[in-house]
Length: 202
Image (cartoon, rainbow, N blue to C red):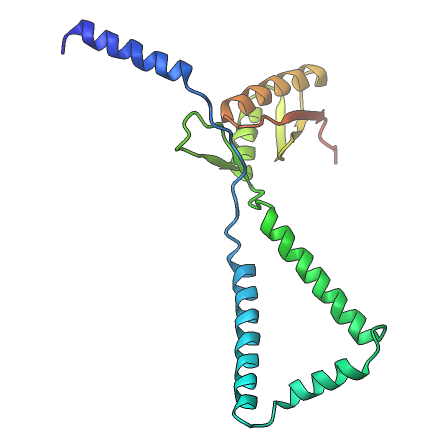
């Protein structure tokens, strides 16, 4: 391949990259194995016991005691009975919990990163992002200690400075953290909140 052909291919690749549409970055969905296992186990166990009892009745055997008692209690207890209301409340709470688990992504500890390709997704753990930003803030002159909390919408930095003017340290830390957030490549860059004070004298 000649140098001219290589340059032409390079220009085509650059043009394709510039014209590529950035794919939307959404939150990662949690597998939620434990809730799914618990629900499946309860449903399977209840269905198995009920199916066995129905088959036993069809085979001209008496129904299980719990089923007869349950039918008798449901037939005789009024709807405003405390046990009926309590069981209904528990069922509603469990149902709402399952619906919330089904319609929310979960994995709040993973922040999605920008997607330059539709077939590639990446994310960064909040604690890892906080550690990276903390290391950058510790490089600022005058900073003695730093605590960084990374959320979905805001990065909160609490620093202690043992020398230099607090306003100068705050400005430097703000600039360093803002640059660090940009370099993380997050899909939705959070805002930055910086607070700097003097260490407590003992």
